[in-house]
Amino acid sequence: MQPPPPPLADRMAFRAFDSADVVWVAISSVLVVMMTPGAALFYAGLVHHHCALTMIFQSFSCLALCQIIWYIYGYSLAFSPSAGGLGVIGTFERAFLMGMDENATSTMSNRVPEGMIYIYQLTFASITAALITGTTANRMRFRAFVLFIVLWVTFVYVPVAHWVFNPTGFLHKWGCLDFAGGVAVHVVAGASALAICLFFGPQRSDDQHHSIPLMTLGTTLLLVGWFGFTAGSSLEANASMVVALLNTATAGGLGSMTWVTLDWIFSKHPRLSAFLEGYISGLVVITPAAGYVALWTPFPMCVLGVACSWASSRWTANKLHDQLHVFGIHGVAGAAGSIL
Image (tube, rainbow, N blue to C red; front, side, top):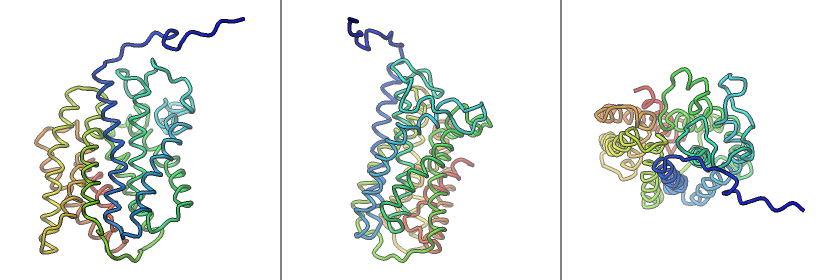
């Protein structure tokens, strides 16, 4: 009779990863997880009170669905080496986490275990899907929403994440610089939201901004999570992490004051909702460049980027009924930050 195998810890010689890097990526993952409920509360405070629970339900559903998709095939297709070296999509070598153990490293970093990369990038997929819910609450029944998110994550987010984040992706090889998801997260979410608005057409709505305190609570969670979102993307506790932290700390304030000033000029009075939207817009602008740019650059980047975001949000809100400004705050601001 064969003796039972020894415990996994005895059978494997653990690789010595950098403990500071591992702890930082773990903390960042926890911070970014908070962004999904933050987006749920932010949007719930903006919509009609009849849609508030639907908005929260949809956002948390995005988290659950992405956890399942990421485990089965999402992570593997996004972050395994490109199939055939084409840089278009990965393989199924990590489907169901096959071959992943305590010593495994990914194409993203050899300083932290691959499992940490898996968790961190899962939080990115979840928040990206949740951002789109700003245009789906009044437009889709839950069954259609679930199907849409599954298809969207599979055929939109996963390929784009492979192109931009994976070192073997073709956009990454071409020199596309996206430090923390300006393109893969915000531009993709904003463009998808615009497509939803165009497909369904204008929707009648009233009683917007029904709960500003709820919106403020959501913004608080987003703000705290954003430090893990940007600075955590360094995947190391190094100088670029510090630069990303400093730029993130500056961008929100610049964005909020730019947006509320423009809104004040045209609406004749300052509004807290405008202040909060500007705060998020400023953070979106700095996201693609947070760890790359000098510490003085958030000022011109955020002022110009948020101004473009504000102008586009007014247009899409009136013409396409993007009342939660998903395209303006995320799509336009993310593109502006990537270009600037």
